[in-house]
Length: 79
Image (cartoon, rainbow, N blue to C red; front, side):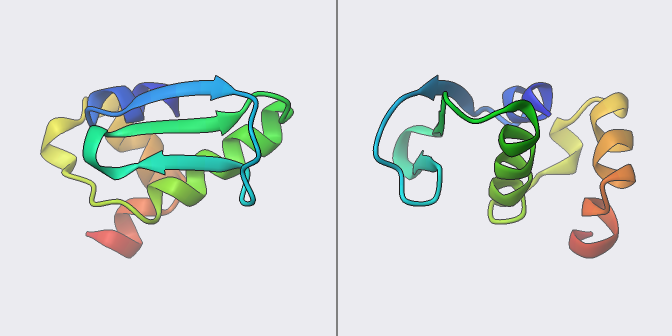
């Protein structure tokens, strides 16, 4: 999941903070900050939630990332 964000030009950071939703997305700089105290499943769920809200240019992604997103149901719902 982190590789997908990287390929889309987003920088992921894991930090502490008072994030009501568990994350902070800085639109102008393509930075996503996720609560560092989340366990692995919560981080994954949070990143999935963020991906569902951003514009994904599938042509920027590697074949492996496109396959991953397809398996997660993103390409069916957003293509």
